[in-house]
Image (tube, rainbow, N blue to C red; front, side, top):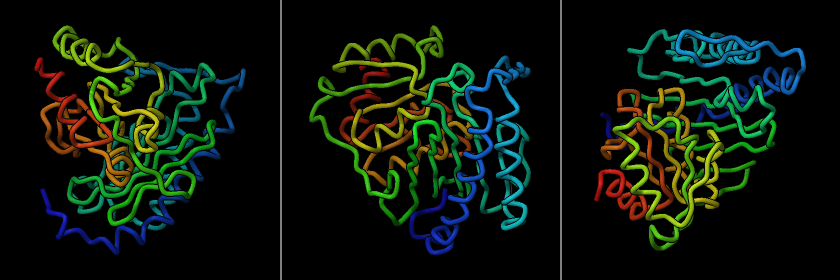
Length: 267
């Protein structure tokens, strides 16, 4: 893994306007079909849903990348991967929370990440129906709708608020640790999808976690939360990257994050 001092920070920051254009294009594509009575839902091989909006959103972002960054790699949920051996790789989730999208919930979002040598260095968490957009980038503070935001410190795990997408995601192996952590926090809530991670970055909640995530589910969240003062790792404490175990744990402070990992491990 490359070190912070290796990062081409100026080059990464110069790509922020393009990342914003990607989010704008995806927003236009997704909102054109949101809450449409004619929206058709298909089931993919992994039993997850997909719609014309997912495909149109990713296609719009890929078209912009082909025009402006043809030498960069891309990993997208709907159209697969190319150029993953390149230094710069864009990671795209056109609709994170498609189940929420098809039921009319406003908490779905578009996730756009730029990784450099496997490390997430720029992230956009855009929630078009909710009208909120978080942007995180190395060397800059995270913003929400253009205004810097920060995580908060509840002081102790017993005062922390926790979000996860759904308890249905936890396997028999994972569930005891999750229940142990749940017993130690002030409250736990469900069904916010990627929006929960924006809430961590804005200091409204303290922990957001999910097991079994793919890189396009979490890569964009890392710069957003880290740039707001938080911590994001997998369940072992390893940095979230293209090759981590996909069990993502985020928290507003290092101390709360460490306590959450300890609880999840049965401590």
